[in-house]
Image 1 (cartoon, rainbow, N blue to C red):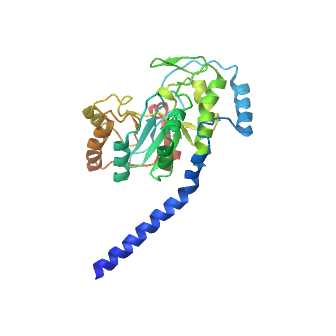
Image 2 (cartoon, rainbow, N blue to C red):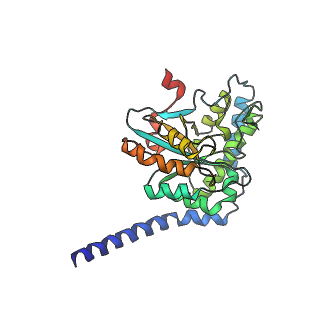
Image 3 (cartoon, rainbow, N blue to C red):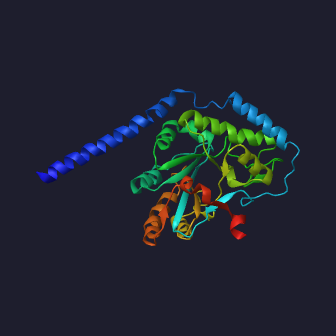
Length: 289
């Protein structure tokens, strides 16, 4: 009788928590009634765009790459903590790795999800479910999934933005879309291909978002085999930011992560939320200094 009573009250408590979560998220879910493809900027962001264009119009970049000053690659710590970041790119036919995401939810592994505008359009309900899950932080992966360049440089065969205006649109239009549906402004940005020139990095920062890179390449654009993914994840060090993908369900990314997590935990590593260490985020160049 005592065991039954305890189970009853545990069940009641669990149902209450679920109801609170669902109720708190219902407003966000209602936002699906809006036109999810809308990227028209409100007046305040139009004015911000004009300011940025005027400020940077005469700047000429000298650098190009993934690890420029200002691109955050890790947490400055000696603790065995790591951050998982997952990209949802927006190429035609991109899908959703439900096996991976279900595993993260089951194992209570937090992740920062860098979501591209086109992926949102094609996965509306899934996007809102993820946005409502407290394990996940929604971040900005650009409007057209382009490298950020003032002069049109390319990365991995993808031509980048060609002007300050295009950089601003790549950031702000998807920022506004995300905010329009989640009611929260994304604080972090990662460009398509994760390539930038130094002017672009400054522009993103000026727009109020931090540029997040990585120090551990988890799945190489979802091309790694299971054992390669596992090996990559097991190569982390304290404070690592891992980059992998959640939009390639036919890849081995999920299997590799599922194989790596128990071993990482047995070594004492813990997955943490990026925003909980916001004041300890550093770039590769800062670490080398």
